[in-house]
Image 1 (cartoon, one colour):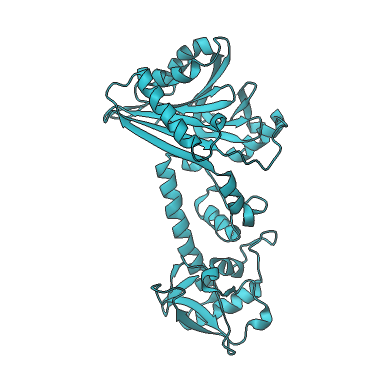
Image 2 (cartoon, rainbow, N blue to C red):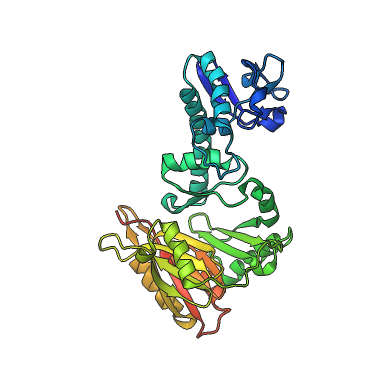
Length: 390
Protein backbone atom coordinates (compact mmCIF):
# COMPACT_ATOMS: atom_id res chain seq x y z
CA UNK A 1 0.00 0.00 0.00
CA UNK A 2 1.00 3.60 -0.59
CA UNK A 3 1.57 6.38 1.94
CA UNK A 4 1.33 9.92 0.58
CA UNK A 5 0.58 13.58 1.23
CA UNK A 6 0.07 16.66 -0.93
CA UNK A 7 3.76 16.61 -1.97
CA UNK A 8 3.63 13.05 -3.31
CA UNK A 9 4.50 9.52 -2.24
CA UNK A 10 6.02 9.24 1.25
CA UNK A 11 6.47 5.50 1.52
CA UNK A 12 5.45 2.09 0.21
CA UNK A 13 4.31 -0.53 2.72
CA UNK A 14 4.72 -2.38 4.87
CA UNK A 15 0.94 -2.87 4.99
CA UNK A 16 -0.65 -4.83 2.16
CA UNK A 17 -4.04 -4.76 0.46
CA UNK A 18 -4.94 -7.96 2.29
CA UNK A 19 -4.28 -6.39 5.70
CA UNK A 20 -6.68 -3.56 4.81
CA UNK A 21 -9.22 -5.94 3.29
CA UNK A 22 -9.38 -3.89 0.08
CA UNK A 23 -9.00 -4.70 -3.62
CA UNK A 24 -6.11 -3.70 -5.87
CA UNK A 25 -6.83 -1.15 -8.60
CA UNK A 26 -5.05 -3.55 -10.97
CA UNK A 27 -7.60 -6.32 -10.45
CA UNK A 28 -10.85 -4.58 -9.62
CA UNK A 29 -13.83 -4.71 -11.96
CA UNK A 30 -13.66 -1.48 -14.01
CA UNK A 31 -17.36 -0.95 -13.32
CA UNK A 32 -16.52 -0.58 -9.62
CA UNK A 33 -14.41 2.54 -10.20
CA UNK A 34 -16.99 5.29 -9.71
CA UNK A 35 -15.68 8.85 -9.42
CA UNK A 36 -13.26 8.04 -6.56
CA UNK A 37 -11.46 10.52 -4.31
CA UNK A 38 -8.41 10.24 -2.05
CA UNK A 39 -8.79 9.46 1.63
CA UNK A 40 -6.09 8.66 4.19
CA UNK A 41 -6.44 6.00 6.89
CA UNK A 42 -4.65 3.58 9.25
CA UNK A 43 -4.99 -0.07 8.13
CA UNK A 44 -4.35 -1.29 11.68
CA UNK A 45 -4.40 0.28 15.10
CA UNK A 46 -1.26 2.36 15.76
CA UNK A 47 -0.37 2.48 12.02
CA UNK A 48 0.38 5.90 10.50
CA UNK A 49 -2.76 7.56 9.15
CA UNK A 50 -1.26 8.46 5.76
CA UNK A 51 -2.06 5.25 3.86
CA UNK A 52 -3.97 6.00 0.67
CA UNK A 53 -7.32 4.53 -0.29
CA UNK A 54 -9.59 5.61 -3.10
CA UNK A 55 -13.23 5.93 -2.05
CA UNK A 56 -15.96 5.74 -4.67
CA UNK A 57 -19.06 7.92 -4.67
CA UNK A 58 -21.04 4.94 -3.34
CA UNK A 59 -18.69 4.57 -0.35
CA UNK A 60 -16.85 1.48 -1.56
CA UNK A 61 -13.05 1.66 -1.64
CA UNK A 62 -9.96 0.16 -3.25
CA UNK A 63 -6.24 0.87 -3.12
CA UNK A 64 -3.07 1.53 -5.13
CA UNK A 65 -0.05 -0.78 -4.74
CA UNK A 66 3.39 -1.39 -6.27
CA UNK A 67 1.69 -3.79 -8.66
CA UNK A 68 -0.73 -1.06 -9.77
CA UNK A 69 2.16 1.36 -10.36
CA UNK A 70 4.12 -1.17 -12.42
CA UNK A 71 1.03 -1.97 -14.50
CA UNK A 72 0.34 1.74 -15.02
CA UNK A 73 3.86 2.13 -16.44
CA UNK A 74 3.44 -0.93 -18.67
CA UNK A 75 6.28 -2.80 -16.96
CA UNK A 76 4.64 -6.19 -16.39
CA UNK A 77 4.45 -8.76 -19.16
CA UNK A 78 1.05 -10.46 -19.64
CA UNK A 79 2.52 -13.88 -18.78
CA UNK A 80 3.04 -12.91 -15.15
CA UNK A 81 0.54 -13.33 -12.32
CA UNK A 82 0.77 -9.64 -11.35
CA UNK A 83 -0.22 -8.41 -14.81
CA UNK A 84 -3.46 -6.43 -14.43
CA UNK A 85 -5.72 -3.86 -16.04
CA UNK A 86 -3.46 -0.99 -17.07
CA UNK A 87 -6.33 1.38 -17.77
CA UNK A 88 -7.71 0.77 -14.27
CA UNK A 89 -4.29 1.47 -12.76
CA UNK A 90 -3.78 4.72 -14.64
CA UNK A 91 -7.30 5.86 -13.80
CA UNK A 92 -6.75 5.13 -10.09
CA UNK A 93 -3.30 6.70 -9.90
CA UNK A 94 -4.60 9.80 -11.71
CA UNK A 95 -6.83 10.47 -8.69
CA UNK A 96 -3.76 10.60 -6.43
CA UNK A 97 -1.75 12.48 -9.08
CA UNK A 98 -4.46 15.17 -9.31
CA UNK A 99 -4.47 15.44 -5.51
CA UNK A 100 -0.67 15.96 -5.55
CA UNK A 101 -0.71 18.26 -8.58
CA UNK A 102 1.38 16.03 -10.81
CA UNK A 103 1.09 13.30 -13.47
CA UNK A 104 0.20 9.62 -13.45
CA UNK A 105 3.68 8.61 -14.66
CA UNK A 106 5.32 10.74 -11.97
CA UNK A 107 3.32 9.19 -9.12
CA UNK A 108 3.79 5.67 -10.50
CA UNK A 109 7.53 6.24 -10.79
CA UNK A 110 7.68 7.64 -7.24
CA UNK A 111 6.00 4.45 -6.02
CA UNK A 112 8.43 2.22 -7.91
CA UNK A 113 11.43 4.19 -6.65
CA UNK A 114 10.30 3.89 -3.02
CA UNK A 115 9.83 0.14 -3.48
CA UNK A 116 13.17 -0.15 -5.25
CA UNK A 117 15.01 1.53 -2.38
CA UNK A 118 13.63 -1.04 0.08
CA UNK A 119 14.62 -4.01 -2.09
CA UNK A 120 18.04 -2.44 -2.69
CA UNK A 121 18.80 -2.02 1.02
CA UNK A 122 17.96 -5.67 1.76
CA UNK A 123 19.89 -6.86 -1.29
CA UNK A 124 22.99 -4.89 -0.22
CA UNK A 125 22.67 -6.21 3.33
CA UNK A 126 22.60 -9.82 2.10
CA UNK A 127 25.54 -9.23 -0.25
CA UNK A 128 27.60 -7.88 2.65
CA UNK A 129 26.45 -10.47 5.20
CA UNK A 130 27.22 -13.49 3.02
CA UNK A 131 30.25 -11.92 1.28
CA UNK A 132 28.76 -12.45 -2.17
CA UNK A 133 30.06 -11.09 -5.46
CA UNK A 134 27.31 -8.75 -6.62
CA UNK A 135 28.05 -9.22 -10.32
CA UNK A 136 27.73 -13.01 -9.92
CA UNK A 137 24.35 -13.03 -8.16
CA UNK A 138 20.88 -13.68 -9.54
CA UNK A 139 17.77 -12.26 -7.92
CA UNK A 140 14.91 -14.77 -7.91
CA UNK A 141 11.43 -13.27 -7.65
CA UNK A 142 8.70 -15.20 -5.82
CA UNK A 143 5.24 -14.20 -4.65
CA UNK A 144 2.37 -12.77 -6.64
CA UNK A 145 3.95 -9.32 -6.98
CA UNK A 146 7.43 -10.47 -8.00
CA UNK A 147 7.13 -9.27 -11.59
CA UNK A 148 6.17 -5.80 -10.36
CA UNK A 149 9.44 -5.26 -8.50
CA UNK A 150 12.20 -7.64 -9.57
CA UNK A 151 12.53 -6.64 -13.27
CA UNK A 152 12.52 -2.97 -12.23
CA UNK A 153 15.30 -3.64 -9.73
CA UNK A 154 17.27 -5.54 -12.38
CA UNK A 155 16.94 -2.74 -14.92
CA UNK A 156 18.27 -0.15 -12.47
CA UNK A 157 21.14 -2.23 -11.07
CA UNK A 158 22.10 -4.68 -13.82
CA UNK A 159 21.66 -7.63 -11.44
CA UNK A 160 20.44 -10.76 -13.22
CA UNK A 161 16.96 -11.93 -12.29
CA UNK A 162 14.67 -14.88 -12.77
CA UNK A 163 10.97 -15.38 -12.03
CA UNK A 164 10.24 -19.12 -11.87
CA UNK A 165 7.06 -20.85 -12.99
CA UNK A 166 4.28 -20.66 -10.40
CA UNK A 167 6.11 -17.87 -8.57
CA UNK A 168 2.84 -16.77 -6.94
CA UNK A 169 2.67 -19.94 -4.82
CA UNK A 170 6.32 -20.94 -4.65
CA UNK A 171 6.91 -19.10 -1.36
CA UNK A 172 4.62 -21.56 0.39
CA UNK A 173 6.38 -24.47 -1.29
CA UNK A 174 9.69 -22.93 -0.28
CA UNK A 175 8.76 -23.12 3.39
CA UNK A 176 8.45 -26.89 3.05
CA UNK A 177 11.69 -27.17 1.08
CA UNK A 178 13.70 -24.59 2.99
CA UNK A 179 17.24 -25.19 4.14
CA UNK A 180 17.93 -25.77 7.82
CA UNK A 181 20.82 -23.67 9.10
CA UNK A 182 22.53 -23.54 12.48
CA UNK A 183 25.71 -22.00 13.83
CA UNK A 184 28.08 -22.99 16.65
CA UNK A 185 30.79 -20.62 17.88
CA UNK A 186 33.55 -21.35 20.36
CA UNK A 187 36.67 -19.54 21.57
CA UNK A 188 39.53 -22.05 21.31
CA UNK A 189 43.18 -20.87 21.35
CA UNK A 190 45.36 -22.96 19.01
CA UNK A 191 42.60 -25.39 17.99
CA UNK A 192 43.46 -28.99 17.17
CA UNK A 193 41.77 -31.30 14.69
CA UNK A 194 39.85 -32.86 17.58
CA UNK A 195 38.57 -29.43 18.66
CA UNK A 196 37.35 -28.72 15.15
CA UNK A 197 35.81 -32.17 14.76
CA UNK A 198 33.89 -31.75 18.02
CA UNK A 199 32.49 -28.37 17.01
CA UNK A 200 31.59 -29.67 13.54
CA UNK A 201 29.68 -32.58 15.01
CA UNK A 202 27.83 -30.26 17.38
CA UNK A 203 26.78 -28.04 14.46
CA UNK A 204 25.71 -31.07 12.40
CA UNK A 205 23.56 -32.37 15.25
CA UNK A 206 21.94 -28.98 15.74
CA UNK A 207 20.93 -28.93 12.05
CA UNK A 208 19.61 -32.50 12.13
CA UNK A 209 17.51 -31.90 15.25
CA UNK A 210 14.97 -29.54 13.55
CA UNK A 211 14.60 -31.77 10.49
CA UNK A 212 17.62 -31.73 8.16
CA UNK A 213 18.63 -35.14 6.83
CA UNK A 214 22.16 -36.08 7.99
CA UNK A 215 23.34 -36.87 4.45
CA UNK A 216 22.34 -33.40 3.25
CA UNK A 217 24.20 -31.43 5.93
CA UNK A 218 27.37 -29.57 5.04
CA UNK A 219 29.37 -27.88 7.77
CA UNK A 220 31.56 -24.89 6.92
CA UNK A 221 34.20 -24.04 9.54
CA UNK A 222 35.91 -20.66 9.86
CA UNK A 223 38.80 -19.85 12.19
CA UNK A 224 39.46 -16.26 13.21
CA UNK A 225 43.13 -16.08 14.20
CA UNK A 226 42.79 -12.69 15.88
CA UNK A 227 39.97 -13.68 18.23
CA UNK A 228 40.68 -17.44 18.42
CA UNK A 229 37.02 -17.97 17.50
CA UNK A 230 35.90 -21.09 15.62
CA UNK A 231 32.59 -20.80 13.79
CA UNK A 232 30.86 -23.89 12.38
CA UNK A 233 27.93 -23.21 10.04
CA UNK A 234 25.77 -26.23 9.24
CA UNK A 235 23.25 -26.21 6.39
CA UNK A 236 21.04 -29.06 5.26
CA UNK A 237 17.69 -29.79 3.66
CA UNK A 238 14.55 -31.57 4.76
CA UNK A 239 13.28 -34.84 3.32
CA UNK A 240 10.54 -33.16 1.27
CA UNK A 241 11.12 -33.53 -2.48
CA UNK A 242 8.94 -32.26 -5.32
CA UNK A 243 10.79 -33.50 -8.39
CA UNK A 244 12.39 -36.63 -9.77
CA UNK A 245 16.10 -35.86 -9.70
CA UNK A 246 17.26 -39.28 -10.81
CA UNK A 247 18.09 -38.21 -14.36
CA UNK A 248 21.61 -36.82 -14.63
CA UNK A 249 22.09 -33.63 -16.62
CA UNK A 250 24.06 -33.82 -19.85
CA UNK A 251 27.14 -31.72 -20.43
CA UNK A 252 25.28 -29.62 -23.00
CA UNK A 253 22.44 -28.92 -20.57
CA UNK A 254 24.85 -27.90 -17.83
CA UNK A 255 26.88 -25.77 -20.24
CA UNK A 256 23.73 -23.86 -21.24
CA UNK A 257 22.91 -23.19 -17.58
CA UNK A 258 26.46 -21.96 -16.90
CA UNK A 259 26.50 -19.79 -20.02
CA UNK A 260 23.16 -18.18 -19.19
CA UNK A 261 24.25 -17.49 -15.62
CA UNK A 262 27.52 -15.90 -16.76
CA UNK A 263 25.69 -13.98 -19.51
CA UNK A 264 27.78 -15.67 -22.16
CA UNK A 265 27.03 -17.72 -25.24
CA UNK A 266 27.49 -21.48 -25.16
CA UNK A 267 30.50 -21.09 -27.47
CA UNK A 268 32.15 -18.74 -24.96
CA UNK A 269 31.74 -21.26 -22.13
CA UNK A 270 34.53 -23.79 -21.53
CA UNK A 271 34.37 -27.07 -19.62
CA UNK A 272 37.56 -26.91 -17.54
CA UNK A 273 37.06 -29.89 -15.19
CA UNK A 274 34.53 -32.59 -14.46
CA UNK A 275 34.08 -35.75 -12.42
CA UNK A 276 31.28 -38.19 -11.70
CA UNK A 277 29.22 -35.57 -9.86
CA UNK A 278 30.17 -32.11 -11.13
CA UNK A 279 30.89 -29.99 -14.18
CA UNK A 280 33.18 -26.97 -13.83
CA UNK A 281 32.58 -24.34 -16.52
CA UNK A 282 34.53 -21.14 -17.09
CA UNK A 283 34.15 -17.98 -19.13
CA UNK A 284 36.72 -15.89 -20.97
CA UNK A 285 39.97 -14.69 -19.44
CA UNK A 286 40.29 -10.97 -18.81
CA UNK A 287 43.53 -9.84 -20.42
CA UNK A 288 46.44 -12.02 -19.29
CA UNK A 289 44.75 -13.02 -16.00
CA UNK A 290 44.96 -16.83 -15.74
CA UNK A 291 41.78 -16.88 -13.63
CA UNK A 292 38.29 -16.96 -15.15
CA UNK A 293 34.62 -16.55 -14.20
CA UNK A 294 33.58 -19.99 -13.02
CA UNK A 295 30.52 -22.09 -12.16
CA UNK A 296 30.36 -25.43 -10.38
CA UNK A 297 27.23 -27.28 -11.55
CA UNK A 298 26.16 -30.64 -10.22
CA UNK A 299 24.73 -33.30 -12.48
CA UNK A 300 21.21 -32.50 -11.32
CA UNK A 301 21.54 -29.09 -13.04
CA UNK A 302 21.98 -27.07 -9.84
CA UNK A 303 24.55 -24.27 -9.68
CA UNK A 304 26.56 -24.92 -6.53
CA UNK A 305 29.17 -22.14 -6.76
CA UNK A 306 29.28 -18.86 -8.72
CA UNK A 307 32.56 -16.91 -8.73
CA UNK A 308 33.82 -14.14 -10.96
CA UNK A 309 37.52 -15.00 -10.80
CA UNK A 310 38.70 -18.55 -10.14
CA UNK A 311 41.01 -21.40 -11.13
CA UNK A 312 40.39 -25.15 -10.95
CA UNK A 313 42.65 -28.18 -10.61
CA UNK A 314 41.82 -31.88 -10.55
CA UNK A 315 43.99 -34.31 -8.63
CA UNK A 316 43.98 -37.49 -6.58
CA UNK A 317 43.12 -37.23 -2.89
CA UNK A 318 46.69 -38.19 -1.95
CA UNK A 319 48.01 -35.17 -3.91
CA UNK A 320 45.41 -32.59 -2.92
CA UNK A 321 47.64 -30.59 -0.53
CA UNK A 322 50.19 -29.98 -3.28
CA UNK A 323 47.44 -28.81 -5.66
CA UNK A 324 45.89 -26.60 -3.01
CA UNK A 325 49.28 -25.06 -2.20
CA UNK A 326 49.75 -24.23 -5.88
CA UNK A 327 46.38 -22.45 -6.02
CA UNK A 328 47.13 -20.74 -2.69
CA UNK A 329 50.05 -19.02 -4.39
CA UNK A 330 48.64 -18.64 -7.92
CA UNK A 331 45.41 -17.04 -6.69
CA UNK A 332 46.94 -14.75 -4.05
CA UNK A 333 46.11 -11.06 -4.53
CA UNK A 334 48.78 -8.69 -3.28
CA UNK A 335 47.33 -5.58 -1.70
CA UNK A 336 49.11 -2.54 -0.17
CA UNK A 337 49.06 -3.82 3.40
CA UNK A 338 48.19 -7.49 3.12
CA UNK A 339 47.83 -10.54 0.90
CA UNK A 340 44.27 -11.62 0.11
CA UNK A 341 44.23 -15.40 0.05
CA UNK A 342 41.68 -17.31 -2.03
CA UNK A 343 38.54 -19.09 -0.92
CA UNK A 344 38.61 -22.81 -1.67
CA UNK A 345 35.85 -25.11 -2.90
CA UNK A 346 36.57 -28.86 -2.83
CA UNK A 347 34.42 -31.31 -4.78
CA UNK A 348 34.58 -34.35 -2.52
CA UNK A 349 32.43 -37.12 -3.90
CA UNK A 350 28.91 -35.71 -4.27
CA UNK A 351 29.60 -32.75 -1.97
CA UNK A 352 31.04 -29.30 -2.57
CA UNK A 353 32.63 -27.91 0.58
CA UNK A 354 33.99 -24.40 0.99
CA UNK A 355 36.96 -23.36 3.11
CA UNK A 356 38.72 -20.11 3.86
CA UNK A 357 41.64 -19.11 6.06
CA UNK A 358 44.49 -16.62 6.06
CA UNK A 359 46.86 -19.34 7.31
CA UNK A 360 47.66 -22.34 5.12
CA UNK A 361 48.30 -24.72 8.04
CA UNK A 362 44.89 -23.97 9.49
CA UNK A 363 43.33 -24.29 6.04
CA UNK A 364 44.90 -27.73 5.63
CA UNK A 365 43.71 -28.74 9.08
CA UNK A 366 40.15 -27.94 8.01
CA UNK A 367 40.38 -29.69 4.67
CA UNK A 368 42.17 -32.77 6.04
CA UNK A 369 39.13 -33.51 8.19
CA UNK A 370 37.05 -33.91 5.02
CA UNK A 371 39.55 -35.38 2.56
CA UNK A 372 40.63 -38.12 4.95
CA UNK A 373 37.25 -39.83 4.35
CA UNK A 374 38.27 -40.49 0.71
CA UNK A 375 40.46 -43.23 -0.72
CA UNK A 376 43.92 -42.02 -1.81
CA UNK A 377 43.12 -42.53 -5.51
CA UNK A 378 39.72 -40.81 -5.41
CA UNK A 379 39.40 -37.70 -7.55
CA UNK A 380 39.25 -34.26 -5.97
CA UNK A 381 38.47 -31.06 -7.88
CA UNK A 382 39.76 -27.92 -6.19
CA UNK A 383 38.49 -24.48 -7.16
CA UNK A 384 40.18 -21.40 -5.72
CA UNK A 385 38.52 -17.99 -6.08
CA UNK A 386 39.60 -14.49 -5.14
CA UNK A 387 38.99 -10.81 -5.81
CA UNK A 388 40.57 -9.13 -8.83
CA UNK A 389 44.19 -7.97 -8.65
CA UNK A 390 44.19 -4.17 -8.55
